[in-house]
Length: 476
Image (cartoon, rainbow, N blue to C red; front, side, top):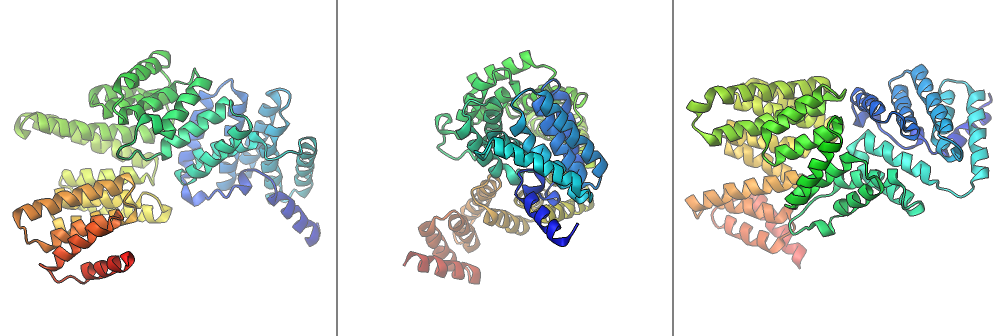
């Protein structure tokens, strides 16, 4: 093949809609963990050719990223077989699979096969000239949803565009509902009537009346709005209809833990461990359950009377978090939680070592860095009893994003520290400075100015002075 032909082929490949052109960064995901999730999905989607075909395509791309072209080819070809078995009018569904095959053959140096699939794609586009195809947008949305949380916003846009073309499609309504559930931030004053996630989950359930996972997701979100009666009814329906479905068990376990029914949640999640291949998430949830159980035991009686039970719960908490990390090596939230639990268990050196690993993984993945800061701040505050270090990391967390859950949590902890210190000493300039930082990061400029002015009457601090000058200038 001449260089001109090669350039032309590459230009045609870049115009295709498939996994190879969707800018999926393999550095942003644990590929082995993703494979486990995809394999689990096969068993859940048996008999549903279109869904299994979609999973096969995604698995083929992951196998390519892992350097296994033979396995990638096998998965892409199986995807084509399943789509063709789906019935007539399947051409649009073949666009992604043919695009993947064209790219794979290009990378394998088989340019004749590559050209053949590009010609097949040209024929489909000639037959259906109106683009984009809703079928392609839908598959793209599911790929983004599965690949990494970094792509959730892109998933939402794909599902919305697909639904603009085919509003009643059950699959894409479901995809949009899940994407909204995972991305929506519930703020103060929000109501279920104005929640995009709640409204879309209701719409998705209407188009997918047999999908009990959607019902539990709606229950979890309604519980945030304190709509417990409807939430519990949905949970009961889901458990009654799908008592063996691993995702139903997983999310019901989370619902029960959030509702305070820790022992029921533990029993359900342990049952789920026997049924799912993606065990890391379940182990993490079990760790959180035992963490909550420890807190309940400490509140219920003295450490002397509950000591043995607390010790057992702490051992279980650490065991399940360690298992989560063993199964998913860069599970950052589990790493940070485990580090904190090592701290509470007075294993300080292991705690520090695990926190450093969590910070490093968060930097590399550019993900959950804010969460690691808040965990480390809690470690410094409650384990090491080092308030200055805790304040430093709470502030670092707050500055990354004050509107995220972790940012709000840090602001609350900082406010409690500041108000306690001011109660003990009304002339504590640093405490007023902390309040100033909270107001500044939340965009409350006038309140921040007042706090910094008060802080500077008691302490000489260049950072507070710089912040004060910056805020005054912004209001001119």
